[in-house]
Length: 123
Image (cartoon, rainbow, N blue to C red; front, side, top):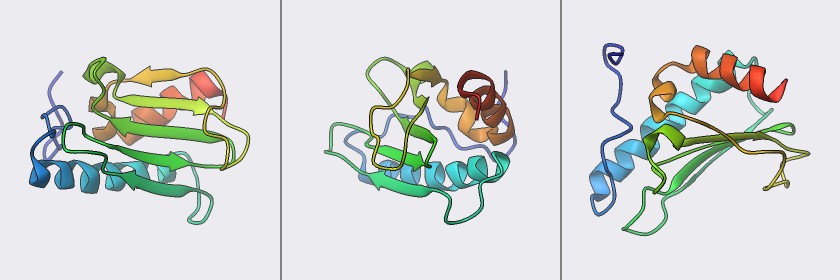
């Protein structure tokens, strides 16, 4: 499957590359805001956090609501598990319900990612 025109390559490794990591975080934040809109979340209904981590990792960008936790990173387990999502009970719940994973490519398709999250998490 090809990337949509203008899509960001979230699979491009960013460890040990500060400019690439900044771009990853900037674009992931943008796409998670679009995901929030696709999920029907108004501003203020969610927190959006970015943790750059150390030089050897991508860090993570997190969308956290009162009922949902979504995190994008480049994990050691591979790009097909780069989006972690699960239910939660409040914005201080960092372990929540069972983990679900999706490909980083879905960041470029927020409507599709929202559908997958709704189906798996019933939110």
